[in-house]
Image 1 (cartoon, rainbow over the protein chains, first blue to last red):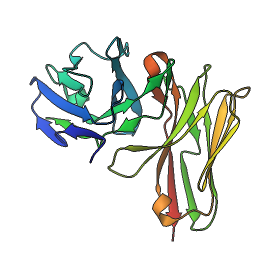
Image 2: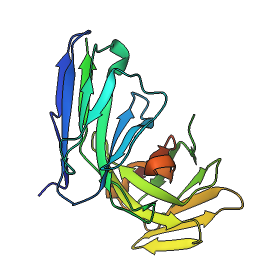
Image 3: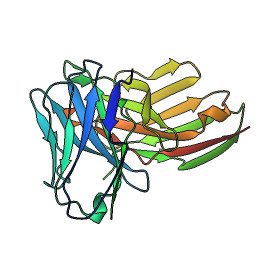
Image 4: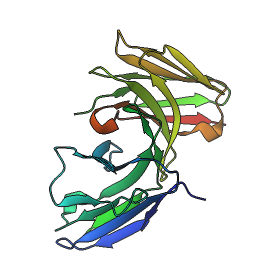
Length: 115
Length: 110
């Protein structure tokens, strides 16, 4: 069974559209994350979320919003897509104990292309 | 800005040789983690080393951490062609969010 799964794997859409990427983890972890990897392979954290707190990287535009229906899911909604949003988006999860995080488990990524 | 910087950016070695990758960071940390990414795939965690640890081993992997120099190294011994991948170091921050370095692209030639 896949520990962290994301759908879709590929997403091609027009500028200005609104889209969502889904993420689910079956590891029982309490914290989930979204990362963006650009064309130069730089990885940047976007959000960290557990059932108590959402932490947003200040550089992330407010067109991006995470939504967590339950502890095992953290979906990413993107409004008014722009060309610069084209990237690979990774979901991840980890268990946090006493404020210290363990290794993160990553999904396979969603490659978003905005035309 | 990126917390971690890897060195070298690219490394090409022959199978059987050892590969060493270095990572430097700027602020204090709770832990430092190393990840591997095969081309077109997701990241796979390798090793987590806490700030009070100096060295950690896992199979053919050895990670060191020098908090006074704010640096870490990943050593892969007896490399194999299957080790070809990008390797990233990451440091934890607020909300346990990881800040990644730019990565080292390792190529192991058979």
